[in-house]
Image (cartoon, rainbow, N blue to C red; front, side, top):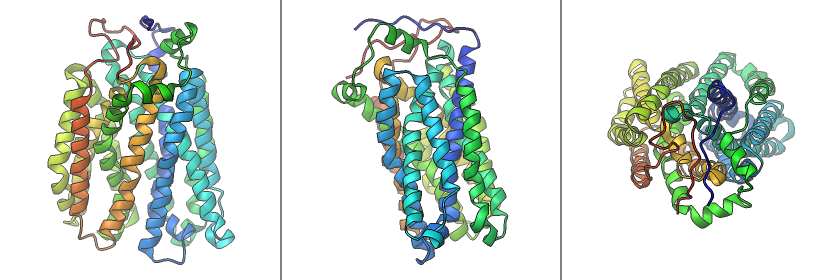
Amino acid sequence: MATTSPAKTGSSSTPRRAAIASLVGTTIEWYEFFIYGLAAALVFGDLFFPGVDEHSGRLASFATLGVAFVARPLGAAIFGHLGDRLGRKSTLIATLGIMGTATGLIGLLPSYDSIGIWAPILLIVLRLFQGLAVGGEWGGAVLMSVEHAPASKVRLYGCAPQMGSPLGLVLATAVMSAVSSLPDDQLLDWGWRIPFLAGFVLVLIGLAIRLGVEESEQFREIKATGETARLPIGDIFARAKKSLAIGIGLQASVNVVFYIISVYFLSYATKSLDLDRNTALLMVMAAAVIDLAALPFMASLSDRIGAHRVFFAGALFTIAAAFPFFWFLRAEQVLLTSVVVIVMMVGAHATTYSVVSSLIADQFDTKVRYSGTALSNALGGLIFSAPTPFIAEAVVGNGGSRWWPLALMTVAAALVSLVAIAAAPRHRLVAETDEPGTPVPARTTTPA
């Protein structure tokens, strides 16, 4: 295989511009993705699945939440192919446009009372389009950051799209908290639509920013030499199955923890702990804000001491904290609950999530890196994220006394991630001999 020379950037501001574009774009996409999860926990059961008991309505609502994760691998395959064949930039513009349109249209949907069974059907269709968009978004955003990054700051720059997740959650929670303060009749009539209709505006902002970012130099060189893969997804399954398995496994711990806190906790807090909606939303928002601040710190630490060490420590913390976390939640004290949610979010999530993006991208050769990174993320979400709120609601129910299966599930997920990080090769996106400030060179071998 022909080697690829280190990438060159058009100006000293290019890495920062690429990182900012990745951060803004993923923030918008995750805002639109998470607003659905919050609405699923709080109002969609009443709006789209009436006529059943409250618990069953929430189960149905969480099931539609998981529909997007089914679509994500397809989105990863489609947009990963386009990203590896046509370019990262144009593909990311497409995914952002699809996500914004689907989110805005959800805000225009009639309820079950207006059009009957067509209401949940249309909801599921639009959720599928959200899943397609996210399936292609994350991998490309990660690559735009790490492929432009200075050699000494790969993990920090790779953290930029990761910060979009808690920032999107903060925005989504803040908006949903504001509309949740409305009287129930107004919230169910029109208030819930506002966060979704905002998707039409946010997508225009994101597109304006992404249009100003240059294509990755690594990809330009691959395309110029005619070395782009004809069928990237085929190459991955033929020669990089181990890398794909590692990429999926790395996400087990972080995904389970995040979706328990960001999605299921709202249902658990309001139905089992008897907290009001706004209090639960504020707890999640506070945890997300602190998590957001912790992510770049952990990523920067990883650039100094190694991403494997930081990730490993986070997975070990998850195992140690799982049972105490759920036990303390049962104390039903607002301050204590807030503290344990924040501690778990930082100790179990920020440590692993800050570096998982660059660790996954690290597994794949440049010419299949978009497909490999996107597919790893999509399959990891399907396996570990999608079932978590549904299983939690099914196991715990309204009483909230059977919390220990959730702790076991969290421990099991962390063990999977420990195995994955132990199996992950320690080659980096940058050569160890590169000087600080040197842009990221392309990998020249494809893992078996």
